[in-house]
Length: 199
Image 1 (spheres, helix red, strand yellow):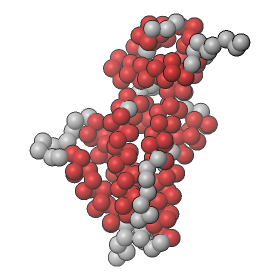
Image 2 (cartoon, helix red, strand yellow; image 1 turned 135 degrees about the vertical axis):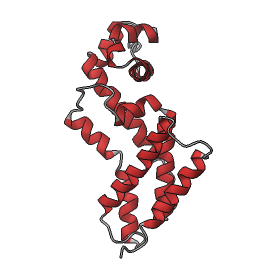
Image 3 (cartoon, rainbow, N blue to C red; image 1 turned 180 degrees about the vertical axis):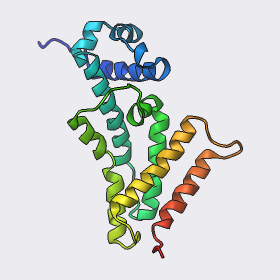
């Protein structure tokens, strides 16, 4: 009879979530493998067994953040209308940031000074935006989007959504605004704007 796995994926996910929270609240100096293990109720041996050390833990944290983010985008139910689908992807982006705020910070900020993802992790991160590019390219082919290349539209759409989500995450929104309603309104205006031929 095979021995049961002691260090399973559930423990791996708990360690990654706790590591992200620690980086968010205590900064990189507050993240030690010994403290991380104690916080999760396991041993440093388990941490080393799963990740092999702190640099590998940080790499896996980065990959896990983009894995969850990419999963949310790829599971968006598309309508077939590129204008509507840009909005849906933007909403999924915001939901991902809200569901995993500590991981969102790992993805798009210098949470660990000097951390530089390797080539493979960088490719995985870039691939998460493929659903956005697919929708934009579909919109260009169908004639919904005009006057710009797919990469330009995708970058601008990403920048708008990222900016709004980042402002919300840092509580920089003006008072009296319904953030969710305003977010969708801005996404719709931006998406429709790509349908207009520039003069």
